[in-house]
Length: 344
Ligand SMILES: [Zn+2]
Ligand SMILES: [Zn+2]
Image (cartoon, protein in one colour):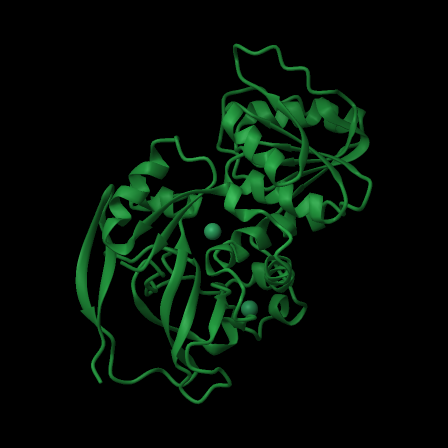
């Protein structure tokens, strides 16, 4: 049976076209055929939407964006899934055989492949489309009553959990998360789930309210016109999730002596002076974090538990035919939390 379906395609910067496509007759041996349940827009997708590139890597040709999704199994293709089984999708296709993969550091695999990304050649279409095939080993069967909208957060939540785990956050720790974009909100969730006392900063009061709905006990409004009173030399761990060099200076001031700063954001090259002397004087442990290792399964478990109010960080829902509008809403800066993409 031929499957025709709706597919969104980024054809140039700021332009998403909606096309009708057909699934190939045959499914690759290690793949499963899936139908989208829900996807969500990531900051990475937004880089491609704005520039047709991310961090200097240009797309060679139009591609379907999206790497955060849950889906239903349409054809298990001989793998051990039931038809209509709801699955969470780990988008990282690691090689599995290099020394980094062998040691479990799949995020460091040099030849890993990733959907909707310029660094994977040839590019793999992402999940902002109705049907797609994906490797069986990347799929996690979940309980049928798991919320498909919440499951789309598994990938970004895993990234946030990796940053929190790298900082060795534990119960009772005082944690400050700077920047309440989607990643900051998810880092708040991750630290709170470990039993930390979480405080949040952002330029937007509404984003701080969202942070409080998912576990922050205090929110600090920051920005050039605000007299910021975030405590100094106070936090065991600061998770930097804003990408702003000013927030990194805030982190250096707010972290306690011999505390840890975990950088979850991509702080852009900047002309703002960074107070690096504080790194030395306070013996700060400053660490980076990219993607995740075993946190994907931890994230799925936390979502399946139903204990997190992810509804508080859903900013909007759009059908596949309106991915353009969804990206524009995200680009407007008015979205608090994640923007979802769903079947028409
Ligand atoms: Zn993502
Ligand atoms: Zn590898």
